[in-house]
Length: 441
Image 1: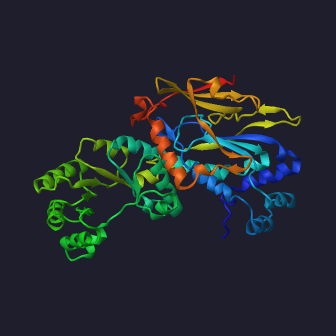
Image 2: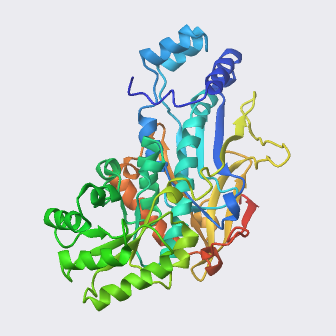
Image 3: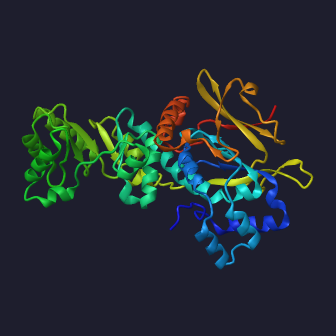
């Protein structure tokens, strides 16, 4: 195995490149755009996530001896294309929405500028990263809204592929979760980690009391004890007898959670453990979290639902050519016109139009040329949504690593405050704000 990410792609990217190099169109300057035609599941907004990961993967997007040998041995491309790929590095420019930003149908989430050969082979990598991470982040943001001030922990690694689990933990953290159980996510992205014990820990010991006593001896009274392996009421009693009234918390992983949480809170208070926190888990999603809003719950742990996008595991984004130079060197807008799969041609600039600090529209200025792109000066009532991520092949490292992750999280929590109240509802509906196309000024 090599350190290259170039084969995280589909074969047709390279066959198109091969043919374009043969007929001379591979060197044509082009503009590709990554966007979503609609929001999955009738959701009211989407959350951009994965941008920092994509930039890091782009650093390693090159073709080494192993990749070139595979292409040659399997006759996927000809010798001209092999020579091109041997020296390939993306040298174009990428602008896009900041990670953590909200998006809507038609939002130009990424704009990739370069020659056709330079840009076309990034399609699969860009889509696989942003479709997954944005789906997780969108679900996580809805859960964060439903939880209010109560913290959320991501604990879904066992319900995802190993690398998807790490990416999901990062996306959830960006969208408002406060911690993850995944240690690789903590190491790689600086996300706070958490975790105590599972039911197997209690079952290992000869009694529940032995299990609790051993855990407290190892982790201290600030730990959280899992109280529903056997009888919950007896579990609470045993937990306080072992740890005392300073026990940090108890976790409930089964039962009718609103009823059980109320009963546990009453019992803890009767035993004098008024400061002991209650964490609930058990197949939570945004709707279950919202249903617990009035319950005496202090924190949530979410697994399967968040890492699978709460029923929508992809953001359904696409990567389309929207502008190119023709044979004379003039810029032309291009667009797919297929029924239900059409796209809006032209190079674009995007702005979040605000009134009294509240978002009212996603305004997208469309330019038929290349140099007439709108800036903030032409849209004084709008917040510019795009930033430069890659300039002439140079990646802005501030969006990568733990620093980029923290920045994306802060940005998301800030821009979420711009949304009108209707954006916070969990029911299916139209997007919270309309997408409005205007001609570039």
